[in-house]
Image (tube, rainbow, N blue to C red):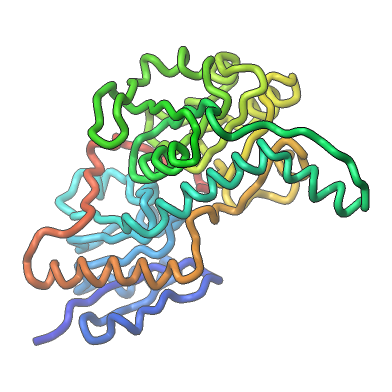
Length: 324
């Protein structure tokens, strides 16, 4: 019996994931360009998407695909009419990067409260300067977006002693997170939070959600952390709010256009931490993603329901900017 043909899209210039693990279960064809994708499409019903920034599905189309598995949690590159309005099954790699991202969020909040950046600067200057810092215990944090990443972040920050409130698309009670407020209560809660953590997907509703109007409702001196999607934040409005002294600082792992251009004003500021969309990338993450896909591939071949299926229609149609 022949093995299913699987196209693996891998970003140009990036290393291959350990696809040799799949050789016994599938015929793997690695593509990096639009021409390679077109040539590989005949007879391929499965796509292993290892490049969350890819434009190939927009440029070429999904062809005969029946199932797409993405190595990321986000599905921005799959939000096309051809895919949303089709019967293509979409699954993602939950369980790989949620906890690492939550740890990154905790790390930057510790960095801010304990003023570790200044400590490093003083060490490099060989300057002994005693300072007092802020407590983490009891600090009020608002997590916006109770998806898989938001959930892990809430649980970890609460375990560290922080007072965490959660906002989602609609208000509800969650058995693990407790009360979740809807977007209609966002502005009021922003005014009470010392730190605001964004773990939102990019949709029509969330694009540009955090602009100057939203920043004005935040507590003076509050800090913003974004590990969701870059286009949720209007970057110039963030800079203006920091320059005006209203916001205290920001830590950004995601940006509207990636990679961040060397001339971007976000670089080089003491009140902004720039991270290259790497908060969830632990050593060995590529292998863990392949393992997620392999488990689903076994289910697919057995004609059983897949794990971690994503309903694109619920996310709403979105056309990410070209650089995302």
